[in-house]
Image (cartoon, rainbow, N blue to C red; front, side, top):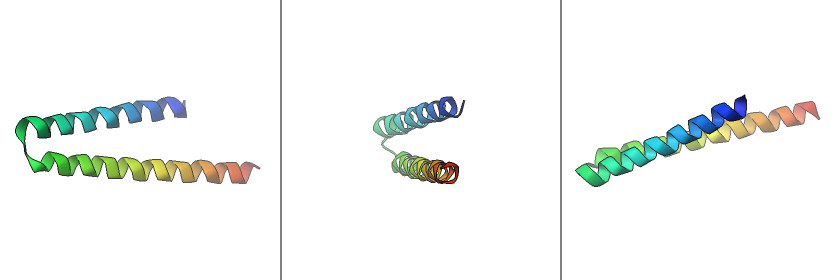
Length: 62
């Protein structure tokens, strides 16, 4: 169940990044690039936090 949620969130992040980049290409507004950078940054931080939690569970269970 957790992997399904992770895949759905990954698809949503990729889709929102594509929309932000497309909006930047169409409108030329730099705010969309800033939003894209924030999306990528926070998605990376969330991925890092999930990896730390999974590693901690593996260490505890072994």
